Length: 617
Image (cartoon, rainbow, N blue to C red):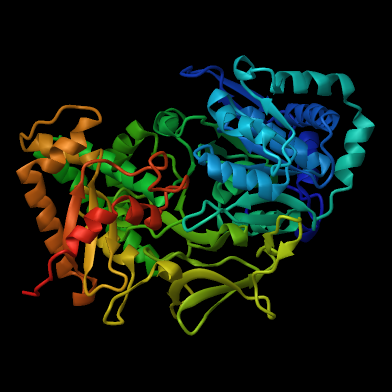
């Protein structure tokens, strides 16, 4: 185990409240939770572990006064703010089950989760969330009885978080609090995470204390970090990755969580805090890389050449480490000089100069993005897992990695491949089943305990897993050929102009694609060539119509096709004028592509690409 902290029991016997009790007793004065004192402020409010536990105890009494009992589901829809984090822990100490709902969920999805979870109480942030939840109180099909609102000014007659806390302060009894949390058992449910629903209604994944804390202990064994390291918490708590990294691992490590309420503010937070660890889904790393490339494009030629030379040294060094080879002394010395003199000063401007561990998961990471960051001495440890596996199944680590792979299995997890290449997983971090509306579980594994993950891949001779695509997303052409859309999309996205892509071709004789310009890099690319465009929302639309941009995109598609086999090549495409996102529906809240939504939204465009027979050259 990397963390040297004393565990209050064997890993398989741990519960989350036991970890908080340890932290308060042994690390009470160490920082546990920080958040901006006010929106836009540079000041932070910080709680130590002892104060966190005191507030959790008060909140637990407040929730109990509202009728929350052991086993109850309580829904939470708010951003990354202290009320969310502390309430999650308080509910767990009562034996209740916190269920975070994505803030971008549509009213229909909110209603489905409210019905399915049978929750009687929901904690929401403010007026924006209240508009989706309030109608459910009058819906006879929804058991919801009460709303608590964090922003008191928006409460509109509903209970407030402040009043709940005040009630808890009056009613808190230490003996009742201690008795309640000690009744927790490792097999009890810790949370229910509803999948983000790329193909239909979200499914409720119930995870126990044992599932989650074994996951945390085993992940900790693979990731070497300084004791009590800071974590910048900006992804939604409805995502299993942030629940692990932003709640459960910090409890295990007695680490320091820095809350960033607005994901758009994560870059300034990184610049300020210079973290030693950072996790980002592939789209985050893509956008960061695009921003760096845009800055580099504006530098004088001589400075760019020095940076490129340093990038080459870093990539060569990463190649030796990737192959498990000793880095030659001369190369190590040259890299150390380049890092100190060229790379670190530039990385420091972005707050990336102290990174020890960087990771990504949730979707295949484009290899060009991985190689780009390797050139800066930042090896992104790609991992893979699902909500159903309590997060990580496989992970690369500094002493064993293959760029482009998703690493080796964590301890206690077995993998094997089905005949069609689907990855099957088995182990005690795999969930027990999907939640049914009556509270029972629907088993999702076979008689031998193997869970079909839905991902297709291969295992190499060294045990590293290489993913191909989601099984349900594989394209089967009219000629019976299987095509991985992610492979094609990532290949065309290697050109810096193209930020997003979706290929289509199921049941067709050839592939077509919808492409979107990169919102950060396309304007910089155009400006460097004297192509003007106004700033703001019109920029991409203007550039997408510009002849020079369209010619460059055509070259990008041609270059991608040259690297793909005939079946994988994009025969026709359309360049769209607006970026895709969660708010417009094309991406899930965790920034994964909703292919069905894109196909339905652009059905006429896609059909138009097949309107005339394609004649191969």
